[in-house]
Amino acid sequence: MFQHKSLRILIMMDVIEAFVGTIWIGAVTLTYVQDALGKDETWWGYINGGFYLGTIVGGVLIYRLANRMKGRLVLSMLIGSTVLSS
Image (cartoon, rainbow, N blue to C red):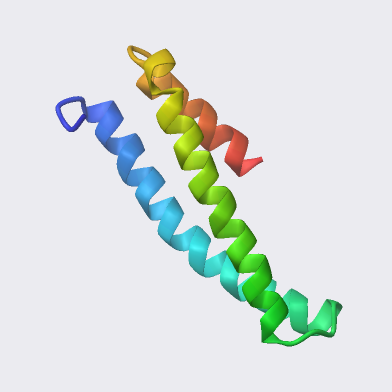
């Protein structure tokens, strides 16, 4: 994957987005749970657990669909990034 410059750039973008996204989601959901819902950190844990479970299920789904994406990796990553940023 690192032989293609465009693919390497997209992979680095996804890695940075993943790191920033997990920090951002954790901070925002904690504030939401405490202020908007009036609940304690236990609820924050439930929401984060659901988020990470969805991330794992999504990863397994993508792994299973990997054969369909062969030859279209850059396009697939670009579409995925666009959908997630919406």
